[in-house]
Amino acid sequence: MMILGLVRWMQPVHGYDVRRELLSWNADKWANVQPGSVYHALRKLTEEGLLREVTTEQVGARPARTTYEITPKGDDEFHNLLRGQWWSLAQVVDPFFAAFSFLPVLPRDEASAALRNRARLLRAEVESLRAAMDSGWLRHGKPTHVTWMWELSIARAEGEIAWCERIADLIDSGVSYLPEGFVQTPDWEGFITHDGANIRPDSTGRGGPDGTAETPVGRGVAGPGGGADGEVAAEVVPADE
Image 1 (cartoon, one colour):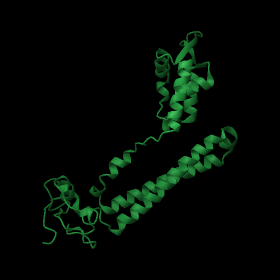
Image 2 (spheres, helix red, strand yellow):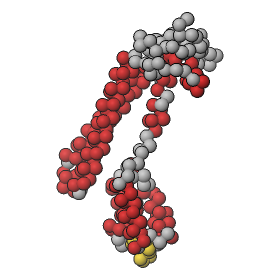
Image 3 (cartoon, rainbow, N blue to C red):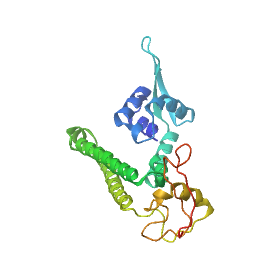
Image 4 (cartoon, helix red, strand yellow):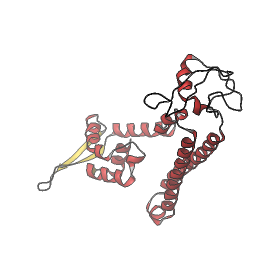
């Protein structure tokens, strides 16, 4: 969509100018578009009939430069893609979600410290965006809707900052990672026996003050006394032993 939209806006336009415009927008950071792939994308869109070559010129020994413009078919496709994004909600893929799903693997103090550090990094990002928004470069050199887009980035970051701090406080409080009345199934056995010391606030694996340890959980200490390679040596014991 970005390539079609830029050609539509700047046409007739060389691939070099499309690439330069994408770089000025930092589009590789937020639009899933790599400036280095622009020429390949232009050729592919031309093959599909969405763009057409207007002229090809060569100056001296420099590589030939082709000028592109959008076709009626390409204009229809651009509007379809544009409205598809405006009227739908796409799930943002964040690698942190994969890491957070293994929260019990980390010691509680490390997990909470990492979340507070994440909040610190997000604050720095917010401060940088606010400084740019207060500058004349954005206020006088960019369309108003660019400011609105940055405001959305700030709002999302501030929401995640609040979440990081809240979850870090919960982890520090020793709250159990398992819901009250949790019933162990075979699928959970390995998860609990390997990381039981971190799942519940009581490192013996007998459960915390919330009284939720009604099923076998792991008991182990990393380092001396653990496995031959220093892993947690887990022993499944009844919670009421």
